[in-house]
Length: 115
Image 1 (cartoon, helix red, strand yellow):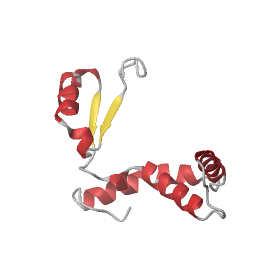
Image 2 (tube, one colour):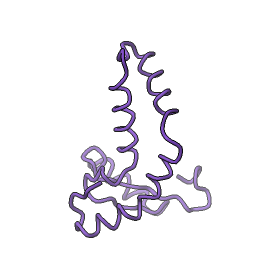
Image 3 (spheres, one colour):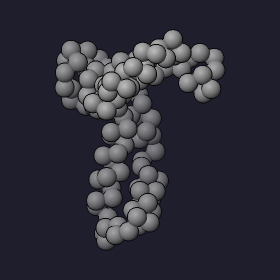
Image 4 (spheres, helix red, strand yellow):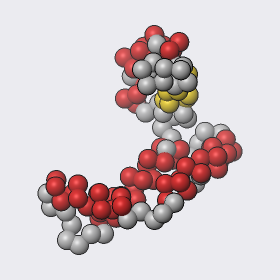
């Protein structure tokens, strides 16, 4: 973190997924907590992570392909082509949805949301 964010502005996001909340990971975070800010996500809340939306969109696009990819190289090609076919502004729209996602999460008191 100190290399990437040498100005001390780094922030670590912990989503509390089971592997990320292991004793080893928790101990490491406690030992290094003075080196960065630590933002706690609600437990197991992938709906807050726009990467989930992107992954789902790519998966859907690849599943619609005919013929389906049959080799790892075919899959990589299909993923790259699908990425390039995202509508202009798709990623920006996801980023701009974050305030609404957080508001929804607060209303749900950390529970499931519509995202």
